[in-house]
Length: 124
Image (tube, rainbow, N blue to C red; front, side, top):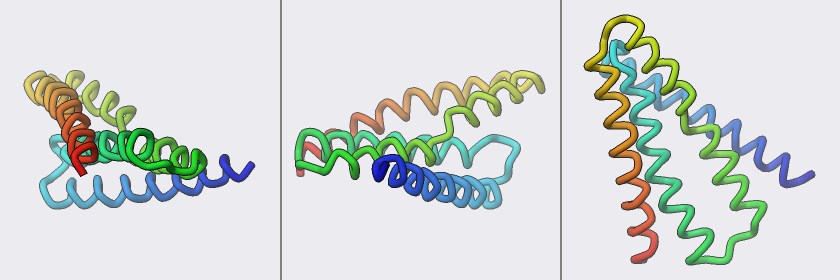
């Protein structure tokens, strides 16, 4: 039961972090392109790459804490469901180029940042 509670609280914190960062980015650079969601997804990819290695292969971390961080916090923080609907809306609105940029950058840069986070954690 503690594991579920910790995951839930961490998920709340991740969700609030996503809400704040995405809102801040959209306010700063405008919402015509989902820059807030893109930034959140890329930061989430970097964090999960780093923490996946750090908590599974480098340091012995309590499985409850690991689940709270990776499933709860990062699960609440990353926004690929928002990514999907926003990309769909760009396509629906005829913004094919922007939709393509969103798909390409989110996926290619996201995978690259997972690798970088993993590599940085492994090198420490």
